[in-house]
Image (tube, rainbow, N blue to C red; front, side, top):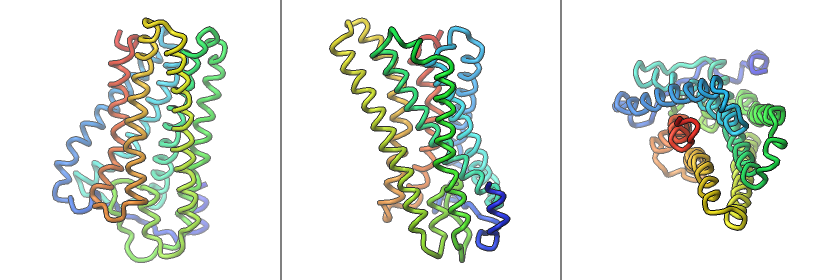
Length: 306
């Protein structure tokens, strides 16, 4: 689809974009790259190990760990889609991007970010059923149902974000094709447009609201019911066990949505915020969860520790 759009509308969209890295901090790119590289190693290693364990260990073939495998896969793809290009900019000054690779990276980043939000919703559903309706857990979350939820997460993520590269490609660009960013972020590209961007901005804002507010509201409702069940119906021992199984998921939620909401707020409502701070926060939004999620689940989940 993206290739077809490129061929039909190539007179408007630049053939090459240049990603310049973190604005104002080019002299420090080497030093900035060190923690980024460390997080990249953590993300790739940790998520690969989790996927291997869940695939090979029969005792982990349960809905909770199937959803964790989905989260690890999404985190792994996000890391591989962003970090190599960032490090190429930081280490070798390779800033040029063809229009095809630029749009594909934009689609991958936004689609898999939306998928991560969807997986977190699915994991909240899993905890809700396990704690609030434990006797029917195996009946409700069968392997077929888990597979359907995974497919729905993928379709929703791609369906909501496929229009980002399509809309960006049809806008008129003029002047510089330099983007003070480390990856192909949709709103950073729209700022180069010299025409009206109302429709593009409205669609991006609607998707952000739908994913952010909608998914967080469902997660909050699920945990509200979980807390109610824990207080009124569980013994102290069962309450402690349920709280332990939920803690890892709550940490992952905070890692993902915390930097995400701050990044969106700074992009849209903080025009006077330093550009370097915006870019660094946007990078942490993509790097922080993939690096820390495997560590959190490795520490907080008894079966994985064993």
